[in-house]
Amino acid sequence: MYNEILVPTDGSPASDAAIEHAVDLASRYDARIHALYVVDGAAYSTLEAGSEIVIEALQSEGEGATDRVRAMAEEAGVDCESTVTTGTAYRSITEYVAENEIDLVIMGTHGRTGLDRYLLGSVTERVVRTSPVPVLTVRQPPEE
Image (cartoon, rainbow, N blue to C red; front, side, top):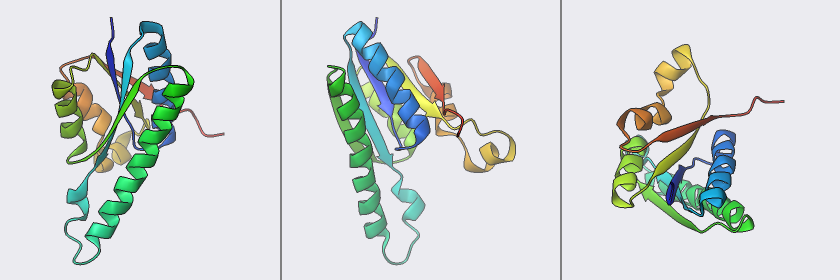
């Protein structure tokens, strides 16, 4: 049923919850996981100085986040590819889906509502609306 599962990650607890689901499904279906971190450099391009430093830091953060996905997958005996790219998050995710024959996207959601969601936007919501394949959303566990 599923051969290629994409897990976009931002290193957050919501992403970690999605990773757990992805690893479980991938092990059940003998699928490969694709870990993707998108650096949105446009948000920092208006900085007069230091934007390269910020982008490099975000790329390093992305490598750490995708390494965490890879470690969890390998621990479960699941193949994993990881990619850190730049662009607009939801567009980069849907492009990755098309370019890599992804069967399923599993994404975390912070569960924001109201004004917070309106002001911050929702990458997950945009991917759900634009993805050509099913998207499984996993809510961030409540903080203890």
